[in-house]
Image (cartoon, rainbow, N blue to C red):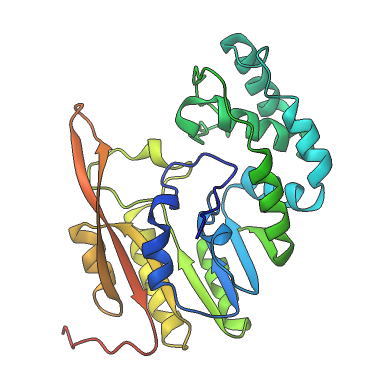
Length: 281
């Protein structure tokens, strides 16, 4: 079956892991994603409806505009993919415009431009909330027209919210036959690892552990949860009490301080009412 690509480039995106995720993702009527990111899981599953959330307000505003103003958005965004705009000086002018703009539609158009022309498709802001990813120097950035139209069609059965993961997970209590898939910013490979390149907002070890606690609370109310993360000693510890864990042998290379590269596996933690775990106490 053909996989559908997201229209955004996204660090930590799950496109390459879709087969494994779908194999472990429980069935249900409504899929809730507290960390929707580029939306690869949303785009490649067949739930009746979706609740998709992220803490990044620019991302959620973009998705709502693509959903509701598809044609106007595609026309405006296409104009940003020309040889004239694919130059460093012009990129930084448009990045400044994005940071100063208060118009949601214009910001959404510029967000896609910056995503496709910026370095490695990163989404990063400084402490003043300004987008600060440098120019990517690509020969001819791809305009994802077909992907935009597919997203817009699929999004008619989705609702997008800018909110915390805790707020999104709490929604599951009021939705019958819901399933939660969590793709948090990756846990660091060590307690000293610098992971700012991989996500916009820092996601602390306390929040990682809290996410596992919330998943335990949901499964106790008969709501299944699947979490994906790096396989580390910490993630195995967080998920061992209430989840069945599966290691996916992806062996991704991750840049770390000092110029070396570490290879890491992906860990899937499934919290499901029907799973009976051994007593680890």
